[in-house]
Amino acid sequence: MSGSLSMNREPVVITGVGAVSPLGCEFGEIADNLLAGRSGVRSVPPGAYARDGVQFAAPVERIPEPPADVSGLSPAEFSGLDRLEQLALAALASALTDAGLPRDGGPRIGLVLGLGAERLRTWELDFLEGGTHVFGDSRDRTLVQRLACRLGIVGPAMTVAAACASSGYALAMGRTWIDSGWVDACLVGGCDILSPTAIASFYNLRALSRRSDDPSRASRPFDCDRDGFVMAEGGAFFMLERGSEARARGARIRGELAGVGMSSDGAHMVIPSENPVHAARAISASLVDAGVRPDEVDYVNAHAAGTRVGDIAEAGAIRLALGDATDGIPVSSTKSMSGHMISGAAAFEAVACLVALERQAVPPTVNLDRPDVHCRLDHVPHVFRPRQVRVAVSNSFGFGGSNLCLVFRAA
Image (cartoon, rainbow, N blue to C red; front, side, top):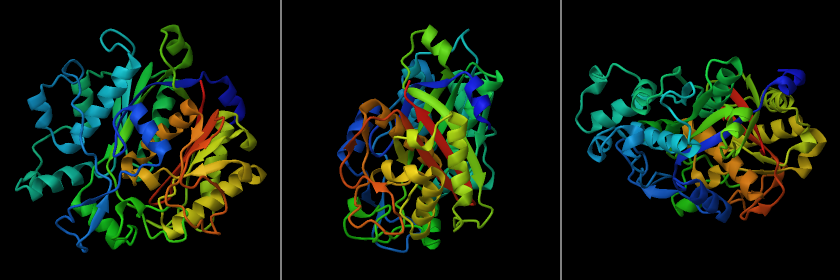
């Protein structure tokens, strides 16, 4: 997208944030934990298909019950939902409440859910408990349809799947809907849950860490001793609105979704391309879309999950896209604390960017004891870095080469 189009577009801003994560479910709590370098990784039951006796993951300890006047559900009804729907509904209700936007007779609100393997997760957990949904699920509506119905969202609603970039693509889609005039506001984001099959599958792909000592030290993006990522569950949702309309109603604006860039590797189903040009193209396109020069970027939240190949490929893409400005831009991976939320990862890392904008500080990469020389970046090891942050960039690179970069700007 050209810079001229970017300059003519009305800013799309974030007025509501809702999250459910291993690092908390309130924005302030998540911000405190990210900046304190706290890990949400725990030792969890190995699961039905585990190969090892010890399994580390980052679970959500408690899913908060949404207010009945928002979800339309009693406590008993909410507890009867499957875990994926509980998590999504809790985060969505929080974003809707945080935005303070009326639903009845007010603006046209859309909903874009970033989620892959929706049925797989729910079928599997049901089957392990003796259920039969896998043989013919009695529910005839998708999750996004059920969520829209419960929240009274009557605008367009859809699910987008782009592997680990799914929830980031949802943000991009929502901004497009607003730009096109199809909606006045849009709830966007995504989430995911842990499941035995997912853990076993990533383990068999040799994508997961095999450490069995200290769970809090298992996720080690950019570190020489990294050996794979740690799976997590959780996610986040946001309310997007036009800036002029948000200001007219006196809404609190957490930031602007200023730029979007996308590309595809077309190289392999699970291994990122060794040629950094494809991912770099997404980063560069997002900056052009936002009208931002590389030397105006104040922070990069890296996708870096802690795999041997992926971290090196991303570091090369960052250097290629940002050029000479790279050495002066701090880069960190919050997956070192949160784990990898798969479909929900991009949305949660967007929260981390909003934290950097609000707190004027860059979250650290914990466990970064010995930075890999092949990942030559301005790392932020162990402790947060105070810094003036007006522009934050977030990378999300999904299996199959789904590359996405989002640019967030202070309001």
